[in-house]
Length: 463
Ligand code: ARG
Image 1 (cartoon, rainbow, N blue to C red):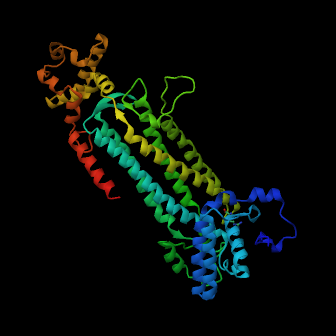
Image 2: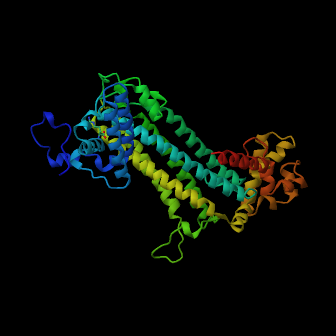
C-alpha cells in the first residue's frame, strides 16, 4: 500500500498546493536534523495526555512504541520522509499514522507546531551547548599542555604588533585559556534561558486542555516552564544569545589563529606546526602553509553572519509565530557545526606546535624590550617614573641613532643622563630577569605562571 503523504492541514483548502510553493516552504531538508528531539518531545506529550485522561494508557503506549520505531529507523537511516509534508513535525506525525492508523491523530491534542518547534530547538540547543563546552575545554587542555611543555620559555610580548616587553610563552597561551573559559561561562549563563519548556503554549493562546506542563518539564529535564504562551512561541532570544556567544568564540579562535599564523611566518619564525596540520602550494614547492589556522580565522565571518541573520530575521516581527522563523534553524546549525569542527581540529593542532629557540633568541636580542625594566630600575632608585621614562626614551633614541642596542651604550654615557645608573643595571638586562622582575598578581612572573598552569590542570582534569 502506498504510504499516506496527505498534509494534515488540507481541510479548509479546495486546491492542491502548487509544487513551487511546496518547494519554497519546506523545511524538511534541514529540520530533519531535529527529528529525534521531536520524537522525544512527542513521547512525553503522549505520556502526559494519558496522565490527564486524554489518551488511554494503552493508546499512549502504542503511540510511544511506534514513535520509538520511527526513531530507530531514523537512526538507522531507513526513514522515508516527503517534502510535500513540509517539515519534520508533519512527516513524523504522518509516518505515525502510517504505522498505527487513526490513533496517531490524537497525538497533536493540545499542541501546535509552533510550541513543538520551539521545544525541539531548545532540546537541540541544550545538547549543542554541552558539546561545545566540552570542545572548548579540550582546546583549553591543549593550550595548557603547550604552556606546560614550554613553561620557562621567554618570547617578545607585543602591543600594536610592536615589540613591547618580554613575556613567557606560557603566559601568552594562558591568555587564550582565559578567553575560552569566559566562553564556557557565557554558554552556561545562557543555558538557564534555554532550559525553559515552551510546550503547552499550543499555537499562541495556550490550550483548552488541562495539560500537565510540570510533568512534561520534569520528564524532559527543563528547569522552568514558560509563563506566557505568546512569548513562548514568538521567542528566539535563546538562538540569538547562542549565535552571539558563537560569534565571540569565533573571534577568540580567530585571534588565536592569527597569533599562531604570525608566529609561524618567516619574519617571526617562533614556531613550527606539524606537517600533518599544514598544506602545500600547487605551484611553489617551498610552501608549507598554515591553512588550518587561516580557515579557522576565516570561519569567524560566517559566525558573525549567522548572528546578523538571526537579529535581522527577528527584527520587527509582529507577535507571535510567523513563518519567517523557519529561517532560524540553518544559521544555528551552521554556527554549531562550524564551531565544533573548528575547535576539534585546533585542539589537535596546538599540541603539535614546537617553539624555535634559535629564532626566539634572535628576536629577544632586541634589547629595547627591556626599556621599561630600565625605567623601573631608576624608579626603584628614587626617580619619579615620568622622569625615568624620559631618560630611558633618550637612551633608546641614542641607540637608534648609533644603530646599536641599549645595553651596548657604555655606563659612562648612561651616567651622564642619570648618576643613578650603575653596573647593576646589566643584572636586570636579560629577558629572563625581566619576567622574573614582574611582581603584580596576574603578571608573567614565572612563579605565578607555573601556579596558573597547575591551577588550570587541576580545574580541567576535574571536567
Ligand atoms: N517548519 C516550521 C518552522 O520551522 C514549523 C512551525 C510551523 N508552524 C506553522 N504555523 N506553519 O518554523
